[in-house]
Image 1: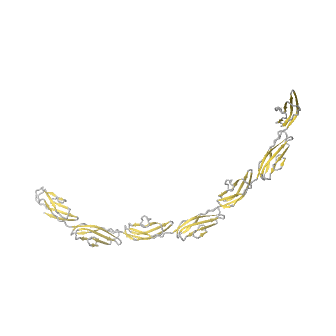
Image 2: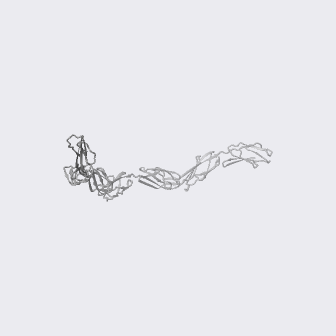
Image 3: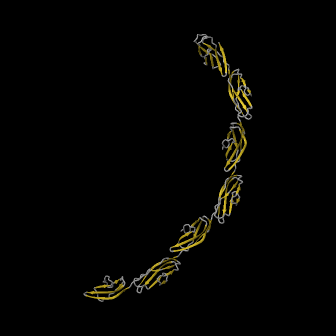
Length: 546
C-alpha cells in the first residue's frame, strides 16, 4: 500500500491517478493504493483546471517485491524436554536470507529450525521473523512447557499368602492420569491408588505410568510383589460315644511343603502329629481346630465333634417262663434316650417299642436281645435262654344230660399237646370233686350243674366247663276217645303226661306219631297194644297199656 502526494501549486478542479497495475484510477489528492502483485509500476497523474490540464508520468516509479511467509510448527512439552521448532516459512520469488527466533524467555536464535530448552514450566510466545533482501514477515505460536509428573508408589504388602489383596499408595507429583500394570496378566487399572487381588502364587513386577498432557513418567518395580501358596487346612472325623477314641484324618494340602500341624482338641489338650487320635473323658460337643503352616503361610479350620453319653442297656420281665400263647411284657430300664431294637429269639419281626409285649406261640427256650442306639452310640444286651415257653394242655370232656337217679358219665378228651398230663381235677358243682381221668357222678337233685375239668402238665394247666342237665322223671298218662270201635274208625288220643315235651306214639298196628295228642285210624279189626314213648335226652321211658 503506497501513499502518493500531489505537488500541484494552483487549485485543481480534477485529478486522475493511474497506478500502472490496471486497477481503477483515483481522483483523490493524496490517494493510497495497494499493489497486490510484485513488479515495477509507472504512475501518472493528470490535473485539470478549467480548460487547462497537465500530465506527469513517472516511469518505473514503484517497485513492489515478494513478501516472504513466516511459518513454523512445534508441540507442547514437559519440563526437562527440549522444544523442537520446524520452520515452514516460504517466499514466492525472492530468497529468504535470514531468520530470527524470539523464544519468549529473552533468548533468540537465527538458525532456520531451532531447538530450545526451557528451564521453567510456563506458556511462552515464540516469534519467527523471515527476511528476504527487501521484505520480512513474522508469525508467533504459544508453547506450553508443563511441569511433568514424577511417578512413585509403594505398598505395605510386598509379600503375602494368596489369594491376597494388595493396596498400592500412589505418591506421584502433579495431576496426571494413571495406568497400572500389576504384572499378573490381569487388566490394567486407571485408579489413583488401586487395590489388586493376586490369585496365583508367584513374584510380580508392578509398573505405574503417569500421564499429564503430553508429559508422562514411568516407574517399574521389578519382582516387587511375592505371593505364596496358601495351604488348605482340612480334616475329617466322626462323632463317637463316651469311652471311644476319636480318630482325626488330616486332608490338608498345599503347593508348598507343610511344615507344622497344630491341633486344639478344645478340652485343654493339643497335638502336633498329622492325623492324631484323641480320647475325651467327658461327653459334650468339642470345637476341634487344626492349624497348618508352610514356610510363609498358615490356615486353620474347625469341626465340631460330639461325644455322646452311650446308653447302658438293661431289661427284665416278671415272667421268664410261661405256657404257650401267653403274652410276655418286657420292662426296659436302659439309660439315655436311645432308639431300640428287640429280637425275641423266635424268628418273629423285631420291635422298636420301648417296653414291648410279645406272645410266644411255640414251646421252647428263647434268647432275647435288646440293642439301644443313640446317635453314633449303641449298647447291646443278650439274655440267653431267658424265656421258657411250655406246651399248653387242652382240657376237654363230654357227657350227656340224665334223669334223676341216673349216673352222669364223663368222657375225658384232654390232651397235653406234647407234654404228659399229670393231674385231673373235676368239680361237679354240687360240692363234690374227683381226680379220676373219666369219672361217673350221681346227682341227688335235678338241676343244671357247671362241671369243670382242670388238667395239668409239669408246668401248665387248663380247664373247661360244661353244663350238665339232670331232669326229674316224667309221669305218663293218656286216654283214647274210645277203646272199642269198628274198623275204619278214627281214635283221638288225649295226652295228659307231665315232665316231658317230646313224645313217640306206637299205635300197635305199625303206625306211629310224634304229636302231643294225635288221632289215628285203625283199618284192621283186632286187639291193639298201645305204647307212648317219652323221650328225654339219652333217656327212654316205655309205658305199655293194653
